[in-house]
Length: 110
Image: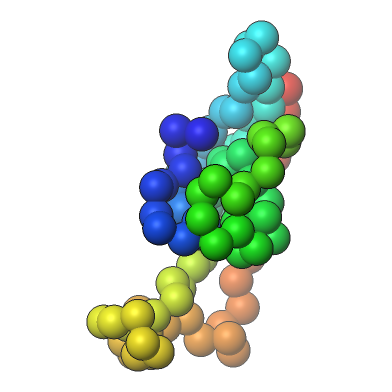
């Protein structure tokens, strides 16, 4: 829960960039280590799925925590520009869909 931002409307958050390796463990110390096989990755670890975050209008509407959701990505653009009324992402921060991206990593027990 510590990675979950207290936004008025729940949304994806807690992304870490430029990561080569990270480990996620449960309360008993059992876990997994994720190691980038090439370029560094972006990742987040949250107690809710993207669907659960999208469907909740307020934090109190989120369901009981039952899973840990690990998201790993090669890159991320973001969702908007200078305001919350539909301004597009500035050109210099856009990701071209025509540019191929590679994502490779290993998963080992921690």
